[in-house]
Image (cartoon, rainbow, N blue to C red; front, side, top):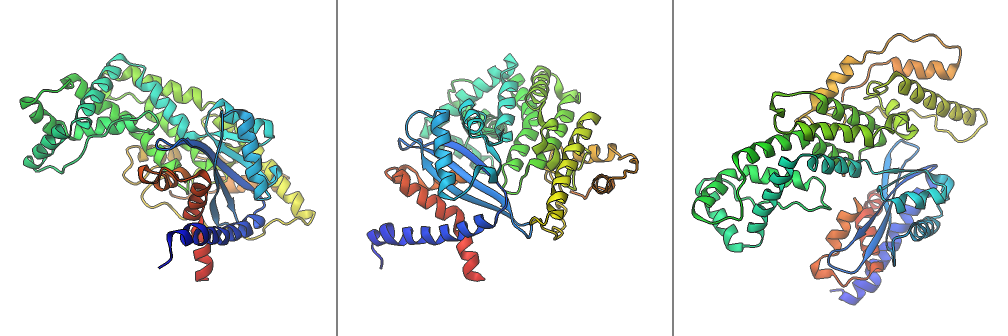
Length: 449
């Protein structure tokens, strides 16, 4: 049986080296790489880690995602320290700045400045911005603020009293309900306020039985129960989109359609809006304000156009459609010049994008707003286009005239490696373990082949 010393000092380092060699081989074949990065601080150890994940498409149009680093960041998180750390990471993998297509980062000013100083294009995290919109909406209406405050007190009572939880679980069993624990909202956990309200609504009956015989710090009024029900419905699309764009298969093409659908969802007046109109209006204003740049950002607009599920159907302005089309034409012209100059441009046709079963875009089959995707696609019919003398423009116009086809990460791994029982691991060992955990499939695939 191998000793702990052998596994820690020889076995794991050898496996790390093997995985690194495979990843390095794939990186050298990539012509352009997109990066995602984030800063994470452990709650059980005095450690801050800076992640770097690479994303690229190979010559057969297969998407690759590789965790390159999860390195400790010492001292203050200044833009200079972040820049130096990122540049050091890229240097270790022989990745030049010119090879970096774009970096997806959080919205902090230090992150934004770090990449601006590097001369690398970067974009803020769409999911993070969605959560800022949700917070803005929840804080816009006093009645919602009071309902959420009471919900926190109620959940906190059971979180701090094992005895109270035990009694509540007995009531759930007596009512032939599954024993489910209440969820507390946490400021750094996305959608956690919605999950908290939803858990209370699901346990409304057991809680009422409990309150009849036991003291509680507070109990939502009938009006507050109704407000929470309505708030959960309004916030459901935000939760669905956050999960969808956090998936490994999500892309920049999903952003503009998601924003357009959110705006339509929030602008519709429903009979159930009574009591949450201010919140709903604030959410719409926040979405409009925070994402006003999306349709004019070439990274998003070109990605949306070349996705055969979307094309230009989800742009809200004809001017924005034209700007996006011009950006796409420029990209195709660059590719054409490279082809004529003999540069290495793949001539293979990518595999046909498979329809997403049941759902459309970011929405799943059972989505609360999947019909809005269909509605927008059906409503935006492509008009006949003028004939162009340019071969490139003709190619782009012909593609856009065709019918559209029918239609989630490193730090989750860190939290599984670094916990209360393993909070004395050094940052270097954490990085090695996370690197192996997230990238071992490269070595396994090679072994199978």
